[in-house]
Length: 323
Image (cartoon, rainbow, N blue to C red):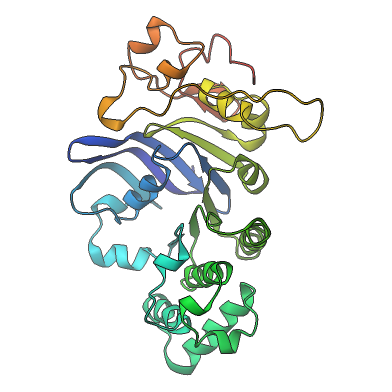
């Protein structure tokens, strides 16, 4: 599609021969917000670390990650250095570990400005202060000279967002950006990301365990399980008419905010270890609808509605209803 910014095709990652990703397909269009959800260990973060060449050398990576038609998996280190933090920026889960503890936060943002926009000296400092104001850090001029340990978790996350914006990215990947924050600060950070996306027109990928946040922030959602995208759809369609039993299970575990109270349903069992995957559909051992046919082959994504895909052999028969 003409408006596709990043296209991931058959992305596979293995560590020591053990698969972590097993053929991920995902598109991100310009200006849209895409959510990635799933249990821990399903491959959400690894997908984007692999796409940006941030995995250790021992990782075996195959497939395609196309940025405007250019394959990043075969790109030179110099090219990746320009793209990372420039065209694509990433916010990591723990800002305290992502920031350098021995450098002032202003200097760290100025370094990003120097690398990606060629700014230095007073101009870089002025732009760093503007970015601090933009992300809502109070007393921005003074805060430039503080160290990460002198700031709260929410302020450090705002510094990380300012650093990500320094390169004026076309895509911002936010990996669990509110994990270590209390509920009030979480809401502030999410409101900030929503506002910045609207003002800058950048695309956003939000990796999260919180389905409510994804429903509120994203126009399209991908559900990952055991190293694959098992369902993707517009947010409204996915939350009202989920087609994959795993998605049905995730939504069934959410309490209803309105209507009569009901007992929450839990998905039995746990995510299989990557070195001990069952044959065929990896979710089959936990699925109430499993049949012998589920073990025959890994199901491919197939149409389940308008712009709605699901990797389940029952999609064209009868999509399971939410619990």
